[in-house]
Image (tube, rainbow, N blue to C red; front, side, top):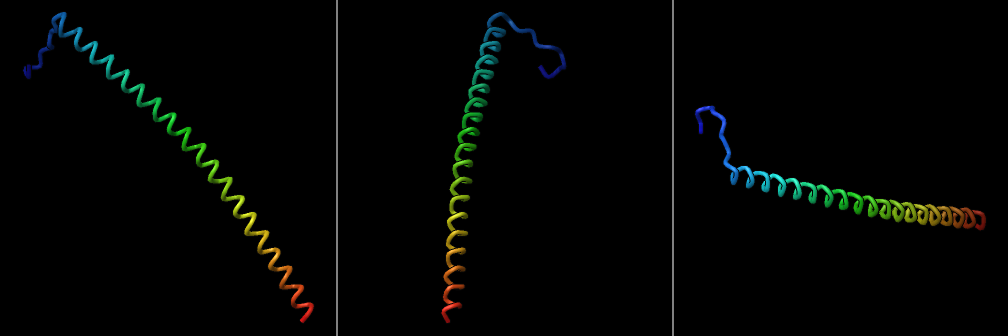
Length: 78
């Protein structure tokens, strides 16, 4: 087989290779779909995370503004 000549396949060998090829393609497509679904899931999780980060940042800014106002009021009273 290492002599560079093409290998002739019998009917059974050809059928087995076709079945194996179809099986590999099916598995490849399943993996591809699973990766796509996983990517979409991660995208949704990332959007939720970004929304929570933004909410936390807004809460922090509100606390800073309240603190600045309290400090200004305290300085006036002082």
